[in-house]
Length: 382
Image (cartoon, rainbow, N blue to C red; front, side, top):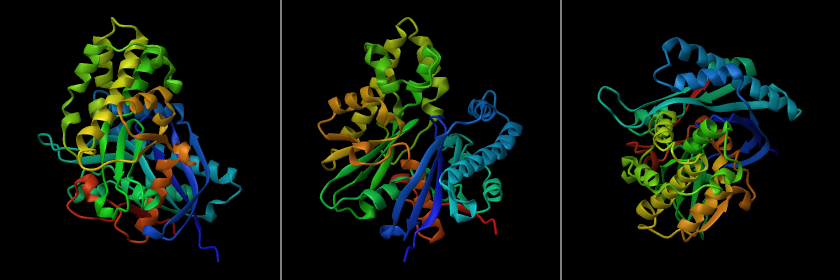
């Protein structure tokens, strides 16, 4: 008997490169989870919604009315993406058991500062998605972990353990999206042995520099960076960021490494060539990743391999730069027969499935939460 059910995972990350939608078949839960990717697409944001997102991320331009409207616009945008994918797979909306949506992060307050407590805001109204797609939606995954004293991030490590643990190899799964984060899974690990943290910027600063200096959305294969040279004093300044020395568990976002900071760096070093600036930002990302392993991981145990996922895994120059800095087997998700782009959308489908089965699905060692909790809020259509 086929116990699989159709589900959809949606992820739109800090890179703002589109809406990732994964159509999957899933059965079981916990360590018995079996999930198969049926179809995956990345849909571009509409021009209007992308403009609103970028304005919302700028504290000097954002306002309550904009956020209120964008929440529902994004709900419609996500729903339309789901409808397109389901139709292209020759399925009907009624075939989908549930949708798990991460939402668009607008602000992530990982530490208490003055009057501001730990908090995280993801937009994309779940009731709108549920109504438009006529199915149940799981969303707002980060809130329960924050309520339990955690950062609400990173959340994917739970899924990394469920799907990619290995009896004989100690491995790290390192996602390079806007922000870069790693999950450490020692060989033959229990879930209590798993830990994770954000290493720092991933594509975020590189993409912004490429946008400003070359009017492109990203550095394909790292070709621009490859043609540049290192600006030593710029790299030194970047590496002095206090976050990089902070002990895990920790998480970060565009609040530290976003447009404002990147534009400041670009302006300060504009006397150098544009290629050199992109090169140095790429080496900076490589250094933050390398140093994170040397300072916080390899002092505890050896790693047999690091598997890179996310958009940054396609930046050949970046991956080669990381490999030169670390004496560890460096692979991409494609090297092990998986899809880098689809990984996080699939992960939220798994997290949504755990929510339905009332399973704890955070890892306190990764987020800093006081205890395990069930992540996600559920909107039923019927």
